[in-house]
Length: 102
Figure 1 (tube, rainbow, N blue to C red):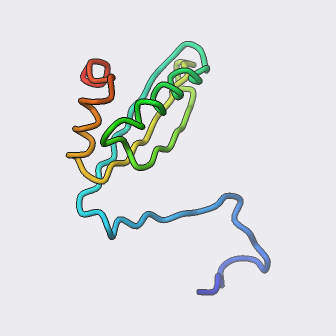
Figure 2: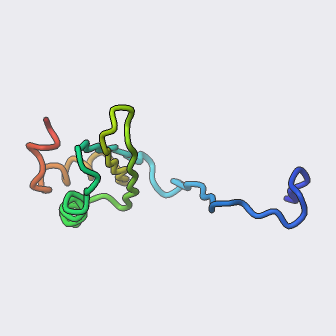
Figure 3: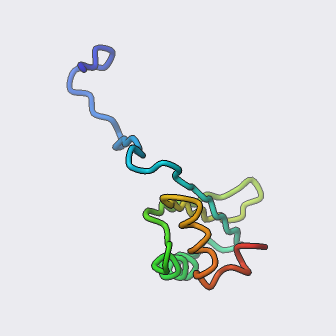
């Protein structure tokens, strides 16, 4: 479809994607957030990445960070599972169950 409302040779400043869940009947998206006085979430991200490899782990993760109005650093993980059953299996086997439940 031509972009009639855009200038000639215009390119978007960032890539765009769309999600297709045609092969997944009940996708599960969980957002995990961590707040810190420092902006270094390297260790937390690495620990989560390792935990995600356990049985039932997420099929995809996206990461984001922002500074809130109080000046605190925040790190967000958007983790995707094929089903809530897979997520529950992972939650129990992840080694993070106590942290995730509190």
